[in-house]
Length: 573
Image (cartoon, rainbow, N blue to C red; front, side, top):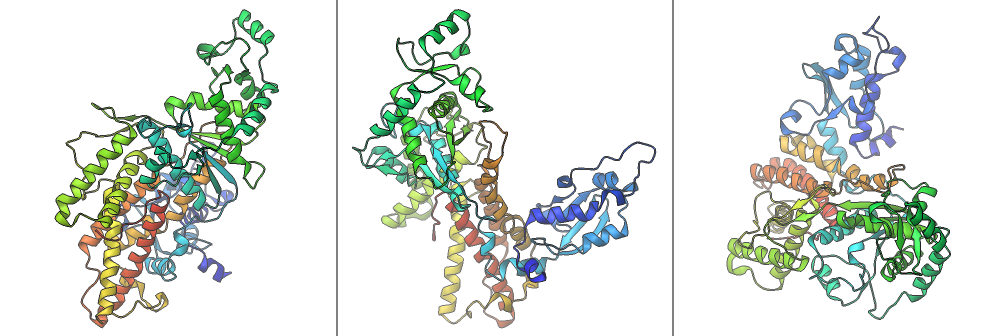
C-alpha cells in the first residue's frame, strides 16, 4: 500500500481534502463550543483550508486553515492535540507530505516537506504532472457558427474580431479536450485552398477541410425530410389559431419570413416538451431556410463518425449570434438529433476608435511584431527562420489578446496603428514565448558546456539531493505551477459533464493563458536572480543539477500548456 501512495502524483485537491478530513474528524467527536446556543454549524469542507500562492505567505506556510474556521469547529479555536496529530501525520494517495504545523494568529498553518515534494515530482521526470490526472472518454463536436456559409463561406475580410475570438476559442477547447482523452471533431468542414483556410493556417489552426466541389446534398435532403415530418412542425391551421389567439414567439416570432407554405418549426415546444433548460423563451416559431439545413447537415456529418451513441455538441458562438445558434440547436433537436448540446458564448471584441476585420487585425499585429523585432535584434531579422518566428509570435499575441479574458466578458483591443507590440515586459503572448525560449537557450548552453568538458551529463534523479533547492522561487515554481497544472487541465471536461446547468456552459477558458503569463513572471524573476549554470566545480554540481531538473520540467510544462493553444515553442530568440 505504501508503494501505491508514494508512486501517486502529488495533487493539491486530494491534499486539501485530506487536511479537511483530519481537521474535522467525525462530527460526533468534535467538541461543541456553543452549548445552550443550538446546533453547531459546520463549515463547508472545501473551505476549511486554503492553498497559499504568494511568495510572501509561502515563506512560512503552504496551507492555512483560518482562525474563523477553527472557531467554528472548536471551542475558542483551540485545536485538540489528537486533531493536530492527524494533521501532522497526513498521508494518502496524491497527498503532499507534511513537515510541520502550528496555530498562529492567522490560523493553523501547515508546511509541506519540500525536499520530499521536489524529489517526488522531479526525480522521475515530472511527466505525470504535465497531462490531465485521468483520461476521459466521449465524443465532442466543436461547432463554430462563425465559419458556416451564410450562404457563402466566410473570408478573412468578412470575419469580424468577435467571430475570430470564437474560432480561436473553439480551437483551444478542442485541444484541451483532446488532451483529456476525448475524441474531438470540428464543424463545419471548410473548402480546401479557400482564403479562410489559408488565414486560419497563418494563425496555426489546422481546421478540417473538404474538396471545394464536395456537397452535403444527401444529408440536407434527409434533414429537410426529418423536419417536414417533425412532430414540432407547425401546420397552417395551427399557425392560424396561434395568430388569432395572440400567442407565439414574443418580440422575435417567426423572424425568418412569413412566406406562405414555408416550413416552420415551433422551437418553444421543442425545449419545453423535451425538458431542455436555459433556452430563450422568445424562440417561438422559426422558418427553415436553406442555410439552416446546410448547418444541420454539417453537424450531422460531424457526429456520424463518433464512436459513441451520444455525442456532445459544443457550439462556440458570439453573444450577437447566440439567439440564432439556439434556433439551430432546437431545429437539430426537432429533426431527431438527441445529442447533448451546450453553448459556449463569447462576449464582444471592442476596438475604440477603429473598425478592423480579422484580416486587418492580423496584418496590423504582424507588422508591429516585425517592427518590434527589428528594433530589438536589428539586421539579423531576415530570412525564413525569422519569418517563422514572427509568424508564431504574432499568433501568440493574437491568442493571448483574445483568450486571456473570461469568455463571457468583452475584450477591448488597442489597435492604434502607431502602437507597438513589446518584445519584453509581462504583456501576454510575446512575454510567454520569450521566456519559453530562454529555457531552451539555457539548456543549449548547458549542452555546449558538456561538449567542452565543463559539466558532466545530468545524473539520474535518484542520485541527487533535492534539499539543495532552497531558493523561495524554486518552491513557488513547483507548488504554484508544476503540481497544480494537471488539475487545471481537468477542468474543461468536468464543466462539460455538469448536468442541470442549462444550455449555456461556462468554462474557465482564460485560465491557460493566465497561468502561462503568471508562470512567465515568476520564472523570469527567478531566472534574473539565480545563476543556474555556475562555476564548473564538483561541489556545486548537485545544486546545479537539481535546478536543471526543475527547469527541464518547467520547459516541458510550457510545451504542454502551449500545445493547448496550438502554439509551437520558439527555441531561440
